[in-house]
Every structure is written in structure tokens, then in C-alpha cells.
Image (cartoon, rainbow over all chains, first blue to last red):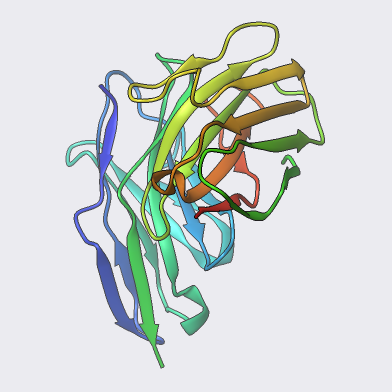
Length: 114
Length: 114
């Protein structure tokens, strides 16, 4: 079965510092991986995806993610965090074998302190 | 991208009643997905709704409790039937424009059952 894991419930970082939000995956076949962000009282916003190609994927709001096949990871990164990046982040994998549904991780709350 | 209009945005309902949530998409899509999210928690897929066929429900969700309609390629409804306080949650509609690509989400319906 397809799954993703987010080992950290919360990540705290100072503004201006680099941030990393971790995600590992378990899939059958090629992984279709995604990152979403959710601000308070808002729906989910798509940040970036890995389908194929370059292992370093660039997305919205200055975020990027590195696909690592040997470590089965897809960590979200940003070189310099902003207070406005504080939100709930979800890693997800698309189950293309079974109805193409998205399977979400448990989420990581990112808190950026001034 | 896709623009998804979901309504109502929030509601407070009496236990034992039913609420129908509407999801309208600005383009034709094959599959639509309905998720449930407890505040601050991850998303759980309720069902996948294909136009012209019965919805496919995930384990733990049944049609009698969450009937879904999908009358055309741009619209779907989810009904939460015979509600109890345990149904208090955020319900989100989602679509993907093509197989394996990113999904887009509505703003969600925040349901409180009293």
C-alpha cells in the first residue's frame, strides 16, 4: 500500500534560517509525491510535486523539495524562513494504482519565530 | 489549475439532521474526491466520486451515512446524514485535472454538530 510519513509533529525555526520539513514514502512502483500547505481556516494549497525528472523540485513561495530514491524521502526545504510561512504542511502520495486518490501524511506544523 | 467553489463554508447543525455540501468546479473533471479533516489533523478520504457511476467508499465510510451525487463532470454533493457530534469536522472537495497530477481543493465546509 502507498503511504507517506511525516516524523515531526512540529518544526520550530527562527526567521531567516533555513527550514526542513521531513517526509518519507513507501510506494509500489514510481512515486508521485506532493507537498501542500494549509493556513488557518483555509483550504489546502499545492506547493510542489515530483513525478519524474530532476530530483530537486522548485515550487511556490520559494519552497523546494529533494527527492531521494535511496532514502525514500521527499523533504521540503526553504533557504530562508519567513514568519508568514508558519502553517500546517502535508506530504502526500498519489495512489495511481487505486482510483488515483491522494494519501496524506499526518502533517507537520511549522512555526517560524521572529 | 482548477477553481473549486464549495458551500456552505460553515454550518452548525442539530444532531439527527442531515447536511448536503455542494462542490462546483470550473472545468470538467473525471474524478472528484471528498475528504474529512479534524481541525489541525490530517485528511482522510471518504470516497471517490466518478460521474455516471456509484461512488467508491473508503474503509470506515458507508453510503447510507455519506451519500454522494455526481450528476455531471463539474458538480458533486456530499450529504452527512443523521449527524452526531462525532461528525463535527471539516469536509473538503478535491479534483485532479489529469491522472497522477496535483489535486486542487475547495476551501472546505466546517461542520459543527450540537
